[in-house]
Image (cartoon, rainbow, N blue to C red; front, side, top):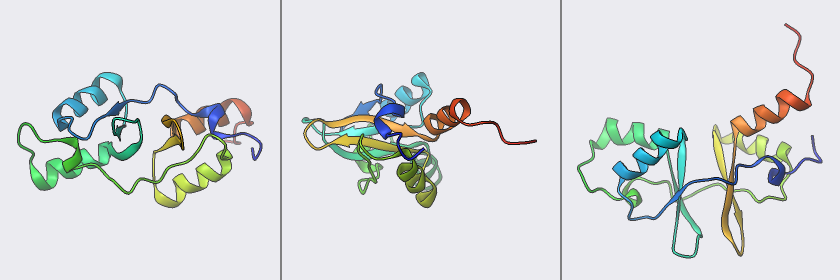
Length: 134
């Protein structure tokens, strides 16, 4: 598993929003696409934050948002990221250590290039590894 890199498993159809996107609009995208997060990027596609299902639970529980609230109000801006050249073992360790379900994949020049998720890792393992004994 050490020789498999993030680039092979990551989802490149990652969804992004701008910091001024309304949380209601971000939630609609997440619902329609069946995804658990959107990455928040600036005009140069550089990652500035991430908004996740967990953030929406916090929004509802603590703040009861009003209409026209921008994503920047609720996003996590101290985002743990990875690059396409990192081994999947290393990114899996990061996911487990932090309790994440997804990690944005970034490139220094291109900005956001994808997302690696626990679903991506599970899909790889289900086809690459023998099933565990019952």
